[in-house]
Image (cartoon, rainbow, N blue to C red):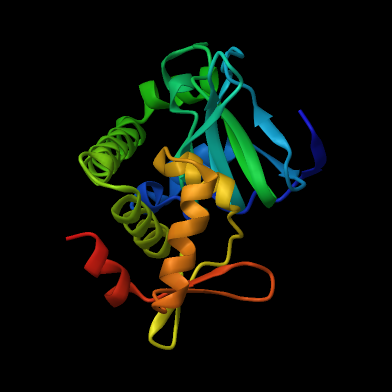
Length: 233
C-alpha cells in the first residue's frame, strides 16, 4: 500500500459512521479497539481489484473512488466514497477478492477493521451485526437508485442526476446553490455515468451556459439544484 503515514488517533473513530453512532458507547469502543488508521496522499491505491480482502474499511476524511478495469484497460467508476461511508464490505464475509480498486482523489484518512477480529466482535455483540445489516441495506437501496438514474436516460439526464447526487452526498450549501468540495475530472464523471469524456465536456458546457453549474478557479463544482432537476424529469 502507498501509505504516507500511520496515525495513532483512536478516540472514538467509529463515531464518523452514521450506522455506528446509535451503538452503546462500550460497543463503539470495542470497534475502536480493533481499528487501524492510515493516511494516504492523493491518487494512492487503498487496494487493487482481485486482491484478497482482509479488511472492512471506512473513510474518515478526504475522498476516494472505487473503479473496475475492463479487459481492454478501460476504467469504470463504481462509487464515489464520502467521509463516514463503509466500503470493501466483501471482507465482512471472509477473505474474498476485492471486486474493485479503491483510489484516493484527494489526501484521505482510511480506517480498517480486520475481518477476523470484526467477526469475533459480531459474535459477542449482536448490535454491531445489526449496524452492519443497516449498512448493507443502505448500500442496496443506493445501488437500486443509481440503476434507476441510468436506466433509459440520455447523457444530459444521467449527468444531471449524478451531479445532484454528489451535491446531496458531499455538497455544502452556498447561497442558492451547493458547492461540491472535491474536484472531479471530466473523465471521472464520464466513468461514473458510463459515457465518453467528450460527451461530459459538451453537457457541462451546456449546463454552464444555462447556469445550472459553475466552476471555481480550481475546477470544483457549484451546482444549482433547481435548474439541474429540470433535466431529470
